[in-house]
Length: 208
Image 1 (tube, rainbow, N blue to C red):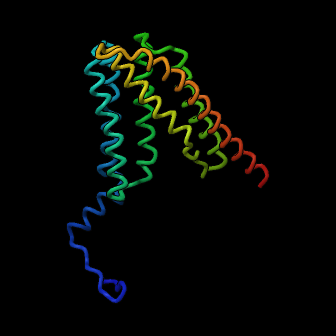
Image 2 (image 1 turned 180 degrees about the vertical axis):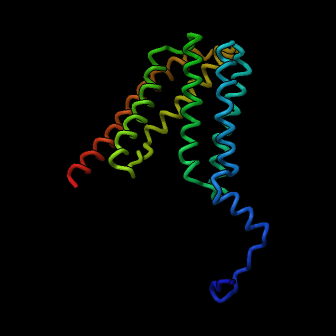
Image 3 (image 1 turned 45 degrees about the vertical axis):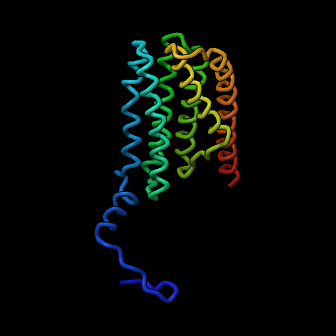
């Protein structure tokens, strides 16, 4: 039945438009999530390229993976295709991609091992902490923090600069050294921020 809007009858949707709406907006298997899955599938070949020192090819594949992150975000917003699955899948793909690259770069001694341990350790502690809290507080989800977004951006820059530097295209040693410090500091600060969220959630539960 058509719904009247401001005195005019709304135009009924054609069948094709309704089908597109179902695919893009309601189904968890939509284009945005498929792009995210594609980014996940890029991780094994990307790690292999770095470990085998095919660094120029690794740089271009990393660039494609980074672009896919922007593309799936655009699709989700432009076509209102955000899903619960996508809200978990997208950050997971980002973390697996960056952690995989960092481990591979550390294996080649192009990034310090302590930094990689710090980055991965923070991610594991966040996952472990959220899992523990959600056993008693099932609705708890950490809120995105500005410092967390800065940390992710710095990690992406460091990965790209490291691949460009060790690939022999341009001397980015100074940029890499600065970004190592930036990533370390923002990793610690973002970890502290998420820990603060967890502590506040626990205290609020105890007082309620």
